[in-house]
Image (cartoon, rainbow, N blue to C red):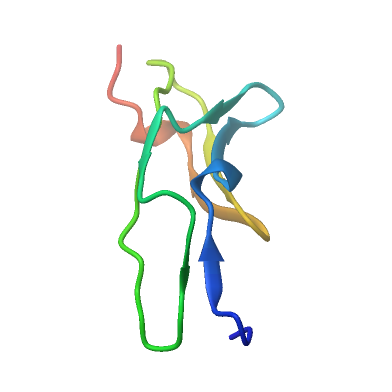
Length: 76
């Protein structure tokens, strides 16, 4: 951990589709903040995503953090 703690900035998180669009959070909480040793940050990020079968990847600082194939899609 850095001496100043770990920083969280919701604007640095996006969702992207393979070779296509990128979506930013439409709402997030908390605002940018820093967690010191022993502290936690409970974050919520809300994304508005298309209702179609596409592969999605959550982009986090440092690279992809979660990838969902089109099998997660519930649409017709």
